[in-house]
Each structure stands twice: as C-alpha cells, then as structure tokens.
Image (tube, rainbow, N blue to C red; front, side):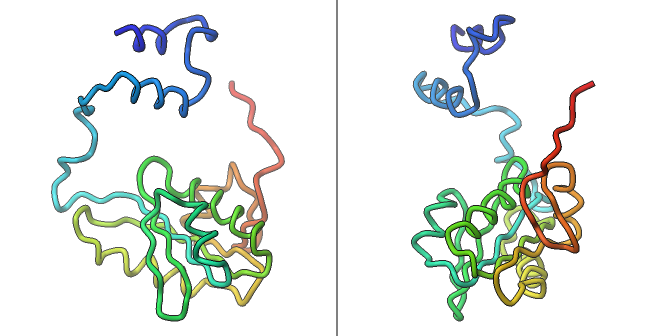
Length: 173
C-alpha cells in the first residue's frame, strides 16, 4: 500500500524516477500477486505482437548480452534470431538492432514484426522468413513495412533501412 501511494503521488519527487526503479521497488515488496490481466490466461486463438531481430556477423556471446530477455534461436549458418515479445517489442527490437550495429558495424541485421498465436511457437516462422528476405548483405539494418510504420515517429527510417533514433521530438499537446 505504501509503494502504491508513492507511485500515485502527485509530487514527482515521491514517485520512482523510472520503470526500472519501480520494478525494483515492487520486487522488494516480495509480493507474489500477479495482475489479473497478466496475459497468462489468453486462449489458444489469441494473437500477440512479436518482433524478430535477425543478425549475421555478430559474435553470439556479445549479441546475447544485449538481449538477455529475448528468446534466441541459432540458425545452421550461424545467424541469430532474437524473438521479442511483451510491451512494445518493435521499439525494443529497433533499439537492440542499433546496439548490435554499434558493436559490429559490418554485420547484417533485419527487423520484422508480426502476429503470433499464443502457444503456437511455430507461427513465428513466417516472421523469421520475412526478416531473412530483408537481410542486407552487410552493414545495414533492414526493417519490414509493419516495423517501419510502428517505428516512424521514434526512429529515422529511409528506404526500409533503420538509420537511427529520430532527431526530432514530438511535444505533448
């Protein structure tokens, strides 16, 4: 109750400064309760948004360190597929792709987003296939049409290539 009061306080100094601190404070309470809408009870026909980062040319250990919460699939040719789910997976994928490009500038990276049936892991295949068809030869980060549309206000994208974080900011109304 005390943490909830702090989080809802009108005084910004009383609230946790960021999500990380809020999550740490929640974890510190030792509460075992989960929200009623935690998503654990979705039916088998429910769909969730999933973003894929497909990367070739980045050492697996370094790549995995940047995306510790992602599901990782190592392909036969050494390419890595990172599946990102949860809240705003496409933004997480784009940020990760930019970080991967910084640690291995010549690497080939592609980001693709789609829907996946809950509990049907094989339905991720078409998203991986789309990322594979977009994968550039080297040194660039390709994005599919859906990812580009979802990212266009926060990231700079030109000709289906992720350039970087948007230079402009949108002022709230």
